[in-house]
Length: 441
Image 1: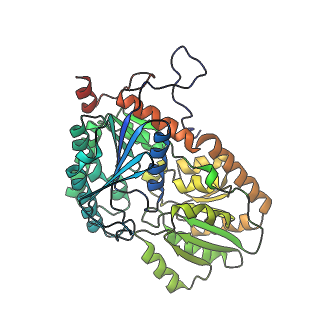
Image 2: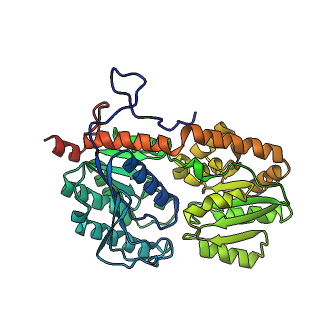
Image 3: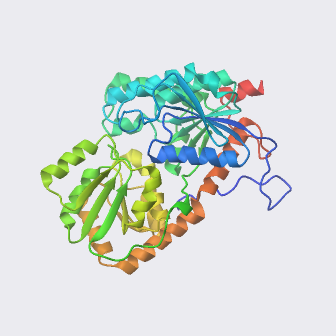
């Protein structure tokens, strides 16, 4: 059975039925290479969680770079520089220098990641004191820098492992040099050993972390969440071919070429596909469309995350794809939950945890990954049966409402961070990383 998201922090002992009331506000610093106004699911997630914690009385700072994802150009009105501090209401944002690089080309992206890792350490004094530091991984360089960052704050370190790196890069063929792989694995082990806690968005990643000798006992499931209020679940009027939307990263992990082949196989009378997003593979996809003359696929380019609900409002079906690699059997893309939150049935080409979620929720059709003919058949089935589409979409919306609404996720983050920071009434934190020992001493 697919594990449900955590619903609420633990109740204080002896007070059944009441939500935990924490003894003090916790000072939290989120250390992230990416943050709005950049488009993307991780950026939106960090912003939503940070603002959710602020609304509950915690003092939160986000330390990030100057926005440049995915084009590699600094987004106006920002200009790259040593440091800039700003406020989003009660949330403080500190930005430090990057070497802006587009989201393609391994060496250039590595330089970008390394530059922010260095600049974040150099400007850490401006982010202020902390009870707990949260670092995003990947990029792994930033998680490595976060070890020194948290030590400088004399605060425990929590690493959010959104994707296991370097394992995913190796399986996708993006990293093949044995020495580089070994160096990355050593850095990964260092990060896990120094962390007080490790959070992960799926049960599969949690299980993988528990098998790592330096991560065992530290992993916590913090499932992804969605703001349901942003999405209109009412379906559009039935008119013409099936309108399919892919909204997300166009990278090595997704295999968007499979979607193009499926659209070609199904034909323009059956399906019209729109692709919203950018990434490492977007130029190759554009060239594939030009060479193949696929008239029923349209590239929309990079779309602000705030515009994604409007795209789903015009779509009949959301499509989510992952490559056929073992590392992705423990993945649940946020775009999957967004399609479900929009009340749209999902055509999913993936195995593992994402497939089990869709099947258990009754939220769509699951086909084998990297199988364009199977995906084309799913499009034909959905195009021919509007009542079925409506049933699947409504079931997906209910599933997200009950398990992945944003407040559930903020609840879980609040518990993890308060316990790591030593300010909660719930059971003592079980992590015993070096940072926790220094605080205890």
